[in-house]
Image (cartoon, rainbow, N blue to C red):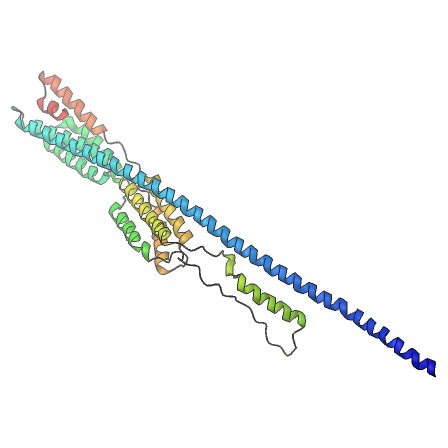
Length: 359
């Protein structure tokens, strides 16, 4: 009996050691999961911060390119303005020369009525060619050719019928040119310029990052420890990373200078489109409209009625052919000059009216 009582305390510690040995692996396993999720959260946070920094760097590079393009656009705009000024001066000089020739014609003695009419017709034909070739004004050229045809009809000279036949063909070719409402298009582009500052551009500051955590549907069952751990981990992850719909990247904020240069770029590009429209340079006009559309799609964050209206107007204007192919209308002028030279030779004396008009 005594020996049995002594052996009982010796077996009790052995049972306690076995129980502790069973509990220690479970505690170690729980600690390893906590460490794993902690490392996962830190990794995701670093990835999110790196992504935002990379987007900011990429946007800064884009703005730098926009600044360079702005300087190039300003330089091109100045060159185009200078060329346009030179062309206007040339047209003014030619108009002065024509006026001077008309004054000389008025001072010539011995010119009868038909000579005056022929000189007027030649002047009008030459003016129509200049209006079409220099100013691309086919409507004005059509009106001037019509006036020249009326003058030739007033002479009642059958020898001028070949000239009138060629003139009729040239008038028909001009009337077939598609009409371009340049004034209306310029007005619509200017209206778009006035709305640039009213569009919803990219924000100047980052929006507040709020975590959006989906709450599971309520159920009568008690959530397990694993579900509780996943809920806490997802809530902590939502504080660091903002999940957006459609996988859109978080936009980098714009500084006031960047807002200014972006809008100035838009103004310059629309002004370039207007210059190309007036000068009927179709390639430059469509390129300017296309670049404006690209900036709208890239930097306008919210689609509103104004932004959709601007995009629709630009899409419509881009389809216009602002530089239609013009016909050649110099045939009637060449034929009239041939007849005048022949008339001068037949008379045996210089045709003073024709010479004065040619000068």
